[in-house]
Amino acid sequence: MAAPTRGTGVWIAVIGDRMPGFEPQDAIAGSIDDAANHLGCPTPEVRWIATELLDRDGPDVLIGASSVWCAPGSPFRSLTGALAGIRWAREEGIPFLGTCAGFQHAVIEYARNVLGRERAAHAEYGPADAGDLFIDELLCSVVGTTMEVDIVNSRLIELYGTAHPKERYYCRFGLNPAWREPLDRAGLLVAGVDAADGDVRLMSLASHPFFVLTLFVPQTSSSPGSPHPLVTGYLRAALGPIG
Image (cartoon, rainbow, N blue to C red; front, side, top):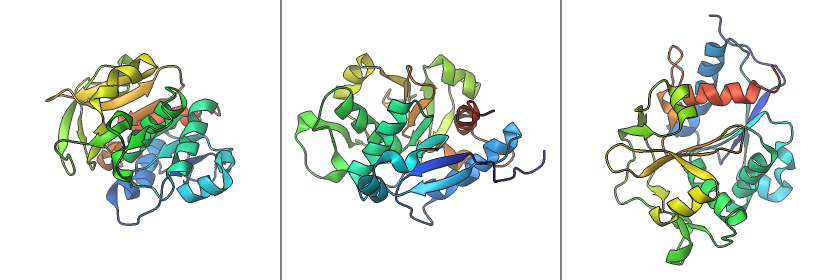
């Protein structure tokens, strides 16, 4: 299949503060290329949207994006900006993928704006009351590891073609188990867990066209001949309303 071309007018907004040389960020554009090649479509433009820009100008800077990806690389320079961008994608029904830090911040956004927990906190940003910690440091860091995930969401099993993929991690923070059931009851569903200990690794929003959160970094497992199925599904969702 021919290599994908650019210039379609379709673009993907990547929320995050760019750190060149950081593999989980660097791999995003390549994984989208791989997915586009697999789908036989032109590669969308990837635009990095800094969290401070979102804080200053608001989510209007995202208008026109076909999808939003919240990237690894926290703590972000502006927590407020990151949450504003995530909220916009969720409320506007824009396809959204949050990987690593993207997972963590999407949980905080949902806790604050859907659960009404205005002080919902991420441990990486400093001390917080135990009852407000939705994202806490993992008991064992999973940075640099590859582990099996048990997927429990039928839509994602169909995307993967398996219920037991192996995924790579770069994170030290994850969901506080105390908030698993309240989030689930509020609609942010557990979609996959660690095969060994059952900790949450994957979440999704059933009421949204595509809103998927992963603690792992699927983009780093993609290659030109083997695109990651989750990134392919994300790109298909982004292109769906257009194609």
